[in-house]
Amino acid sequence: MKKLLSLCLPVFFCLLFPAFYMHETALATTENASGAALSITAKSAVLIEGDTGEILYEKDKDKELVPASITKIMTLNLIFDAIDAGKLSLEDEVTVSEYAASMGGSQVYLEPQETQTVDTMIKCISIASANDAAVSMAEKIAGSEQNFVKHMNEKAASLGMKHTQFKNCSGLDDDIKSGHFSSAYDVALMSRELIMKHPQISNYSTVWMDTIIHKTKKGEKEFGLTNTNKLVRFYEGITGLKTGSTSKAKYCLSATAKRNGMNLIAVVMAAPDHKVRFSEAQALLDYGFANCSIYEDHFEDMNFESLPVPGGIPSEIAVYPKEGFSHTFTSEYDTSKIKKQIILKDVKAPIKTGDEVGSLVYFYDGKKLGSVPLLARQDAEKAAYIDYFFLAVKKLFKTDT
Image 1: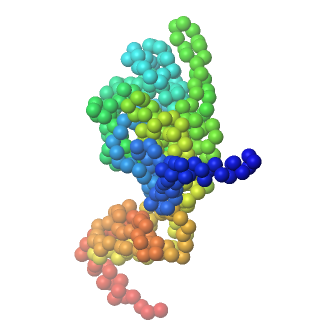
Image 2: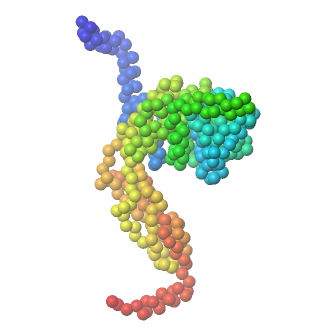
Image 3: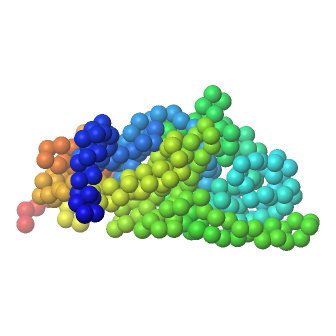
């Protein structure tokens, strides 16, 4: 009898509540441009591949929204840039100012004049999203949070983040009216910069729980840190990255993961609750890993023809590709349909080593995928009259073999 009821109940409810079932069916079959079913309720979302930067999924990706603590992705970028430039080291001491210690929201309760290493500050920002640590690092690097924010906006412009403006380094009390905003795609761009240029961020952003030691005049005290990104506990290949939430921003997340050589970055903004931001970011990553693959070319099988340089010495030069080529396919592909075409520029001497002199263009089934710049491997100086004289003499005395 119970088995009979379990079979009949769905039909019964379908007859009584057809609108409910139609709604559920519509949600389940929502598809992106590639035909994969994805139901994203967050106001804005995007999925990109880190190596190529290609967009695999988007929903209002350029919508300007309040970013909350995912603002700190840019703060971390500038911290690691300073380390790479030799201006900062992980062992450097950072002294906490009155202003930095006064930050509310997410914090690790740093006290005025307390000192911590850069390494510990990065840990506090990445794991616990500490506003006090973020401001302390801003002051360490730029002298003040205000000066640091100028560098944040300069970096944003250099990354092509067209829908972003920062007013602080933490995302605390951010407001579009005050001029602090970003978009899902822009967050993906700065996330890509962080995980691809500074992969060591994963040593911090994937830690689930850790501790720091507060060192003040009152003595030493242990303080626990718990990661705000719940995906680090279970998602295969997770590399980070950062959560954010305020009453204005709702729930935001930039989630990054790597599998089989493919780096994916999923950003959701203004999700209705914390569970949705994690489930939808996971759904985006799952879609990417299930449906996408990367074609890479490192030119092992290619011979690049020489480039004629009229009026140059030498009269022709070797060329080489600036970098390898990669493209993310969102469905199965046939490598035999990938065609390459070398296009060389009409150039004149002088040419310097490294000058762009052409491009290697890729097509799939007749559609352009992208291109790689071709560079000069050597100099070609402008020929003088004496060069033409010696060239004529050389030709005059040349004998057949």
